[in-house]
Image 1 (cartoon, rainbow, N blue to C red):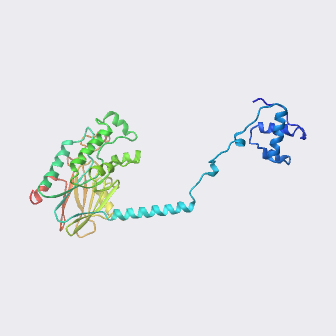
Image 2: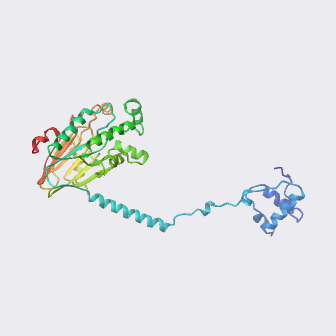
Length: 362
């Protein structure tokens, strides 16, 4: 648009006010007919008329501004928002649901009418890794099946890191250089392992490798697998605590993939220290993650009989990460177990292969 470059007259008269308003509007700097009209005691409609008259008399192009001619629906100042009292009500509802969830977790229980019960803990399978000992997994699964075939109550709890799942940060470089399987294929191996163990699984807690999928996508893929393959078990992505009842005997079991607290002199220090924290009392505590080999130990837990601290070993026997960081080679033992009868916890052990000697009928 071409506009006249006349300067604003020093004195505004009825003859030049139309020109003045027209040129001020053409500047497109936020002026409106209402604001310019107020300068001269005119209404917005009158100011518009003076400018249009000047425009028509001088055969000038029409100046059309969207803010003047457009009808805008849904402007930002009309946006609906949730009132603070409604937000507070929703927060209270969420708290109520969370309280219900916490109570539900406190009520988790596994019941056997009689014993003995062989509770086997497996972790750190790292399926898909070239360094995983798949023959050892087959061997331990054969022991589980053999116990069951001889009428023993055998139950399995998984403690996470079912696969490598190198999908985060610098670990993606390991996938490029070391992983013989795609991530989707690793989950296929997990499916197969869960299908074989499904008749025996009673509980599962995820490990850090499993939870990387959760962290990246917000989807708990391991939980989805259990929902499809082993529904009805106890599950938690972080910490699985439950009461185990065998006949009239009851004991509390706490399973975490990782525990805080380490000691070069006591491998189960984190577990034993965890027992003394508020809300961390248990009779059987189980850990994984360290890849140091399966271990089962008794410890003083403030009761008349000792508690049991168990550490699952890893089935990943050849670990370049451990080698690069100078970690000692792990023990060959992977799965660990506790034997519970109607009169209490009989013993815990890192030797699945000898349990049958002490359980009748095997």
